[in-house]
Each structure stands twice: as structure tokens, then as C-alpha cells.
Image (cartoon, rainbow, N blue to C red):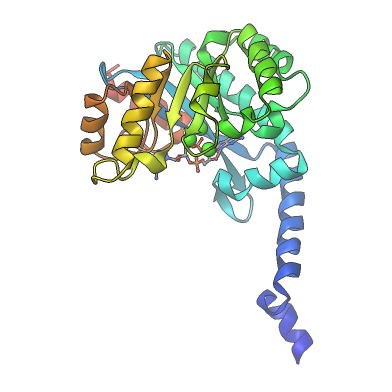
Length: 278
Ligand code: C2E
Ligand code: CA
Ligand code: CA
Ligand code: CA
């Protein structure tokens, strides 16, 4: 009968019910995950295209879900932003990334920048700068090696963003604009913020060499960054042609599967030592 079917096949339930049910389940799983530290970080290098050197790594969170396996951030970050758990998760990420950077230093790797993504909710958190300062002190991470990635949408309240960015710069960290080009920030407004770097969104890099408008967009962002004395990183670089193009346009840094996918800390260290025959 119908009732039995409903129990056997969740797709028989109204779509809305199933969705809110999944969501509640995920939400309670997340609370447990934060208590039990089921998260892990994957690391992906940022490479200087002139020198070939690793200038930094970006920390990207993953969730080892006890039943569902390894989940990418897209599967759970949006929910944590809605329900506020991102504050705890974000703090865990910052601390774990700083600890890792210090551990690599102690293991003899040359100094590297550590990039960490901030969510809107974190960016709006009361005393964010003081909290980050606390994490830097606690982990022994020199502030100048921490790079915080924010998105254009976080700068829409210009007054608030200016104050927040100023207080972050005051503790000595670097600021970059992630997914640059996908938001609505005017180029001029960038001058109002103490920003160090633009990261060109990978949607512009993918078809860079296919003769469409992306080539013009990437060239424009790169030369604008130069004029504003900002560093620039191209995201999502996957092949030689893209590297070639970026070099010709003086885009100094790149990140993408071309070098390596994001990988766990121990694999990253192996990758690094192999690359430099250390
Ligand atoms: P993102 O900050 O733009 O990070 C780069 C994403 O692009 C990563 O996906 C990475 O795996 C992927 N990627 C890197 N190189 C390539 C490439 O060559 N080709 C393609 N197709 N993709 C590439 P991931 O790890 O799934 O992260 C997705 C997003 O989740 C991140 O985008 C970031 O916005 C968010 N995220 C990740 N970790 C955190 C975190 O700790 N806190 C917050 N608030 N957000 C995070
Ligand atoms: Ca990022
Ligand atoms: Ca990005
Ligand atoms: Ca992003």
C-alpha cells in the first residue's frame, strides 16, 4: 500500500519534506562533526610562474562523514553559513591551517603563505581580528604568512568592510579577493580597501585560450591589478596553454590541477619535497 511505499522510497514523499528532512539530518550530523572534529584540510599550492616556486598553499576543508564518506565543502559550507556553525568550523580551519604551516616550517620547508577562506558570517563576526590574533599567538604562526580570502560580496557594505579590513591589516595578515570577477564590486572601490591580491575566478581561466571574451577579461584584470599594485593569482589552471597565456600577460601566480589537486598535508609535504628534491 501507499504508506509502506512511502517508507521504502523516500522519493514518494513530497519533495519539500524530503529536503527538509535531509537538511535536519545533515544539521545534526554537522553539530556532532564539529564536536568530534571530523573535518580535515586539503592543501593546494600557489605557484609563482616566473620562478616556479611555491609561494603559498590554500587550505580547503573536507568532511569525513562517518556514513557518507569524504564530502566537499560545497555539500556542507552553505548550511553552516545559514545556521551559524561556520563560526566554529571557521575557527577550527584557521587554527588547523596555522598549526600546519608552523609544523611545515619546523619540518624544514621554506616559509610559505597559508591562505584560508573566510565566510560572510565570519567576516561579520564581532572581534574577528582579535580572535585571529589569538589563534596566531596560540599557534606561533607569524601574521605575515596568513592570507585571508574574502569575496567581493563581503565588501558591499563599504563602511563596515573598510573598518573590518583595516583591523585585520592591523594584526599583520594579508587580504585577497577570491573568485574575483564573479561579484559586483566596482574596480574603483577596490582602491578603498587595503587589499593585497586578486584571485581571478576559474570560470574565466577555463576557456582562456579558446578565443572568447575570457582572454580579454583575464588580461584586463591582470593589468588593472598591476596598476593598483596588487598581486594576482589565476585559479583553476589545468594546462600548458593557460600557463603560457598567463605568463605572456604577466600574471605572476597560478593555482590549479595543472600543479596538483588539493591534497592532504602529508601528501603535500611529499609533493613539495619531490618537486625540490629535498
Ligand atoms: P575556492 O576558494 O574558489 O577554492 C578553489 C576550489 O577550486 C576548490 O574546490 C578546488 O578543489 C577547486 N580547484 C582548484 N584547482 C582547480 C582546477 O584546476 N580545476 C577545477 N575545475 N577546480 C579546481 P573545493 O575544495 O571543493 O572548495 C570549494 C569552495 O568551498 C571553495 O572555493 C571555497 O569557496 C569553499 N571553501 C573551502 N574551504 C573552505 C573553508 O575552510 N571555509 C570557507 N568559508 N569556505 C571554504
Ligand atoms: Ca579560495
Ligand atoms: Ca576561488
Ligand atoms: Ca569561493
